[in-house]
Length: 114
Length: 109
Image (cartoon, rainbow over the protein chains, first blue to last red):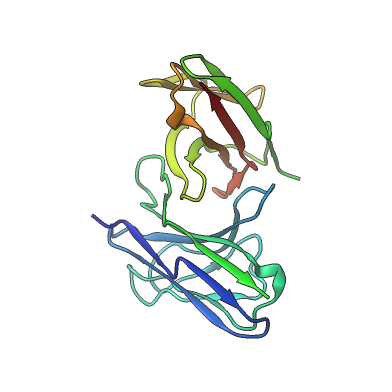
């Protein structure tokens, strides 16, 4: 089983450009999440989706948007990138309502905004 | 505010035992998680505690005291592959996950 697949693995982006980070899971999990991870800080939630067709804002949603058209896909879009969005981005999923609801993470996208 | 505290870095010797502590202050509590993250990789689930006491899983054990807002992860018979960051996360009263910054564990031969 592939689990969660993220693309691209890494990207260098010019400030002001837009970009979509892709995330696909094959575990049929109902909940999906986007986190960013910065040195010295804990994982911070950007957006989440508890089920297909619904999304919610996390701790640091500004400058990002998401959609959840189906169970498997949860893309994250940066409409106009800024250098402070340089980070490692992790997509995750969980079986909400299942035992402990542990998270399964994708391998991450290293994004540099210059 | 809500807060998770864990040491930034720890060093231990191969074959030894190490204890990584995590203290938390959150609005409500609905479980505590430990994840392992090797450098350049994704976090992977290690353990979950929702009741007080010790949960043992092979070489790894996790302890929780809800009254003290305290948990620890105990790693026995350390191996070089245990060199990684260990992330503590608490699910608060609103079922939101609050993450610590992680403890980088360095294992020396």
